[in-house]
Amino acid sequence: MILGIDTSCYTTSMVVVSLESGAPIYEKNQSLTVKPGERGLRQSEGFFQHVNRLTETFDDLVKVVSPSQIRAIAVSSRPRPIEGSYMPVFQAGLLFANNIANALGVPLYRYSHQEGHLMAAIYSSAIEEIPNNFYGLHLSGGTTELLNVETNEDGFNITCIGGSLDLNFGQLIDRIGVKLGFTFPCGKQMDELAQSEPHDDYFKLKLKDPEHFNISGLENKYLQLIETKSAAYSCRHIFNTIAWLLIQLVMPLDNSQNVIFSGGVASNSIVESIIKNKILDRQVFFAKPEYARDNALGIAELGRLKYIREQSL
Image (cartoon, rainbow, N blue to C red; front, side):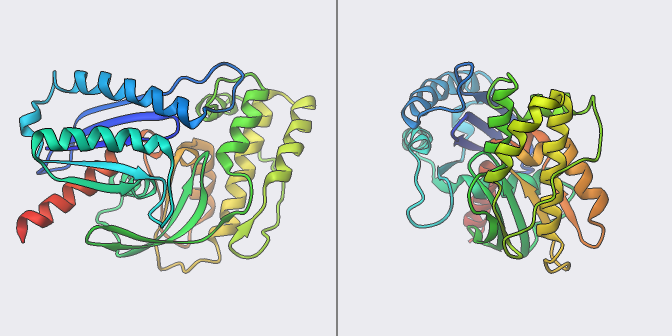
C-alpha cells in the first residue's frame, strides 16, 4: 500500500491506496476551521491546525491499515513544481511524512500540490490512460492557470501558458459568498443554491490576449449585482461567467490534445455542464467533485506509479 498526504491551505488529506490497483483503502479529508465572516487563514494558523489534524488522522488510519503494510509515502511539499514555490502549510505534511517514512524505513516521494490535482483529475475522470501531453486547467482559490503538461517518469513537466493575471476564480467566489453570508469556503454552498434559479445570464469579458485575462473588475460588478438580485440568481451568474470565460480560453487551443480540469472550482456542476455542452470539438475531462477539491489521492497515485517503476528496475 501507498500512503499519500496533502496539507493545502484549507484541507488536511490522507489517503492509502492499493499498490496493485490504486483503489483507495482509506481516505480522510478534514477542512481547516475558518471563523465566520473571515475569508481565509494565516499560514501560521493553517500550519498549526494541520499538525493537529495529521496526528488525529493517522491515529484513525492505523485502526484500518497496519503501518507495516505501507511500502512508500508520497507527500505534497510545495504548491507548484517550480523553483521557489513555497508555502508553510505544506511543511506540516512534509515533516510528518518524513518522520513516518523514517520510522517505517520506506521511500518518501515529494510532489507538488498542483501535480496532485492533475493526477487526481486523470484518475477520477473517464480517461482510459495517462496522456503523454495535455492541457490542464488548475482552478482554485489560489490558482487560475492554463497549463501545458507533459508526462514523465517522475510525474509531470508543467508549463504555465495562461490564466488570470490578478484575482483567482476561487477568490472571486469566496469573496462574494462571504458577502452573501456563506461560510468560507463558499463554492459548494453557492453551487447548491444556484441550482434553484437557473438562467443563462453572464458578464461578457474579453481576454487580455489569447491566453490571459483579468477578473478583478468582476468583484465590483458582483458586489453591485447582489444588491439588486437574489443570492441564487447571483451565484448562478458567477458560475455562468466563469464557464464562458474558460470556453474562450480553451477554444483556440490545439484540439488534438485533451483538456483536463482540476481544482476546487472544477467541482462546480454548472461550470462543468456548460463547458461540456459547448465545447464539442475536443476531449474535455473533469475530476470527480470530491477529487477536484483538495485531496491526497493524486499524490498517492503518483507515488504508487513511481514505486512500481523503481521495483521493476
